[in-house]
Amino acid sequence: MAIGADRYASRADTLVFLVCVLLSLAAMSLPQRLREPLAQALRQTVLAPFLALQQQTELLSASLQRYDAVAAQRDSAALVATFLPELRSENARLRGLLGLGPRLGSGYVPAEVLHQAEPTNALTFLVSAGRKQGVKPLSAVVSPQGLVGIVSSVDAQTSVVVTWAHPEFRASAMAADGSVYGIVAPHGSDGPRSWLLQLQGVAYRQFVPDGALILTSGLGGVLPRGIPIGTVVGGAGEAEGWERTYLVRPAVHPAAITHVMILTAPPSRGDLRSVFEPDGQTP
Amino acid sequence: MRRSDTFRFLVVLAVLVVLQFSVRSHLGGDRIAPDFLLLALLIWTIRAQPGTSAGVGFLVGLARDALTPASFGAGALAHTLVGYLSAWSKAVFFAENLFVNGCLFFAGTWFRNLVMALASGKMKGGLLGWELLVWSPLQSLTTAVAGVLVLWLFGRRLAIRLSDA
Image 1 (cartoon, chains in turn green, blue):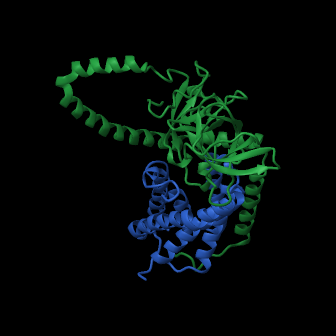
Image 2 (image 1 turned 60 degrees about the vertical axis):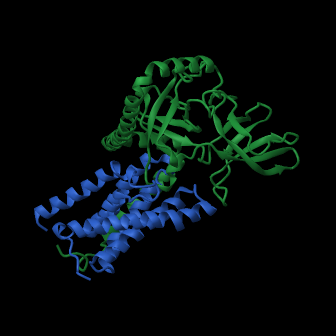
């Protein structure tokens, strides 16, 4: 087929182009309450097979990685099989000493992160669990390192997660010892500190040392208490002598995670900080 | 164009769409792996009218907006512009050879990311600079390399005329 020389933009082409541009601008100006049902309808119809394909591929990839791990474990197990009774009894003793039990026995749903190619992927992304798995809007989304974000909308098989990097994300937070409370928000998209959070609204008389662990406080009832958000890396400023703001290095980077846990029920113990202790097993 | 050429053309585009949702996440970082869906759109524009390309770009962009609702509509606008401008510029300016098509793939990917970043309104300052000067060029480069490979392997079978230059 001859290409190019005999083809130019006709009036019809220009008209179609202008209509598409106008429709795009109209889509951008849609209110959130119309925008989300439209996106949801597309995800549940046209895009459903592609999302299913992506989900299966992620599962296959995880299975291959697990196969290598299982093969290594099998070899190790074969090697130490002669010492199994001793190992079993030692393990039982250690478990008894540490009081190690199921830290997050129920009330969560595991999900794969379905990353996309757009630059805004770190702000919101899809996960492979939805209404059928028990996910509800405003559920907390965590990884073994800490808070990832919250669920903003739920489809049948997938959910949209708003990460901490989204400009509208806010979480009620506290220092690990419960001495300081504030609100955590993204630091902003300008400058070298763009992927940091900030702890706002700290009373002026209260200091938070560098390296202090910041957890969710549970106030407001959206996020459970005790999920790690990040660690303080310095002060970000003072507002008129009545409050301080601190920079917080997030515990999790949204672009680096492949699997998450969605908390679907209030924790039985009310405080999740023991679940995320670094020397213990995490969910 | 023969019917078999059209069939092969559509099969290659379908394969690119499948690659986007299957192997892409295993080809390196999310921000630098080739964008096969955009590549399919750009290859479509090689043979289509600018108006049709704008319409297809709008549909592709709208579908992608449903997957990243942070910037709903921005993807539709970006892909519409890329589709139209790519088809139009191919008709007016570009010769048919691999290098020029590679440049088109590179420029199309970078321009798509530029429009999306600006239209979404969620990236400013340093974040925007890093996106446009570091991550977008890297993604554009991988997409261009993938596109050149596709044309090199299948170009003549798809009735896309390529010179030896």
